[in-house]
Length: 137
Image (cartoon, rainbow, N blue to C red):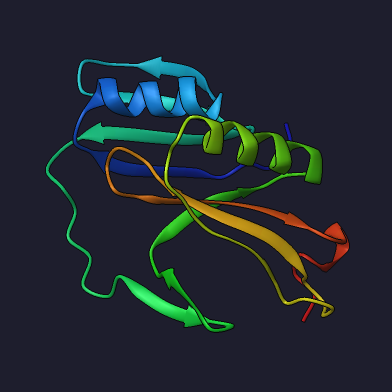
């Protein structure tokens, strides 16, 4: 088994969360229970548990002149998958936030966009110009 991350987050609606990730993003549904579900997001496990809305005290920061959400999670994909997903979500008239290239002409250059899920979590999709630069300083 390759290394994968697992993240567990509260959600407001199991049904809305499942629909967003499976129908809009194209992720697979994993195990489910009465008040939780697992999502296979590009081989990584997201568990959503029905609960109240989570309150974040510091919602934003500035990077390269762009206002970005300080709390977010995401997936790094190849450029083809990134382009397909960006086009699909844009065509669905979902609000795609901050589609841009970060660290242009520097180590770690990548395309990035954010999108909100039904629980107001910001999900980021990145594609590095050179995947070897993912952790390079």
